[in-house]
Amino acid sequence: MDQNYATSFVVDQTPEEVFAAINNVRGWWSGEIEGSTDKPGGEFTYRFEDVHYSKQKIIEFIPGKKVVWHVLDGYLNFVKDRTEWKGTDITFDISKKGDKTEVRFTHVGLVPQIECFNACSTAWRSYINGSLRNLITTGKGQPNPKEKAAREKASS
Image (tube, rainbow, N blue to C red):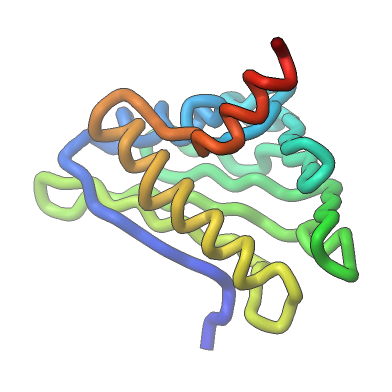
């Protein structure tokens, strides 16, 4: 059985609109994002304070259909093996379901056997089923307000 963390949802928007929203990573994922998130071979880093850092490379980029990020490097400060994400793949599969579009998110390698599974899957659920879905359906994502407040406080 497939133990990788996965979740999915269906929206009224087109696969092209969904694809554009996924690649607008800053619009739905909290933290500091640097680099290119919207072209094949692009690399970008994600950082949230000293809690989480990861570097992704876009290894599949099929407009309206699929995006895959390979995690080149990662650091989580709340687990024993701080590099649990390294070498994992974060995938977004987009498909038509009648007149709707399904988004299926899988973090390949994020499995129940690793320490961050519960915390990481809970975070993904809020980003994917909440923030990303809202970015697609309303044009506005919700990068985590707690993190946003921390960022604003840090920059003031």
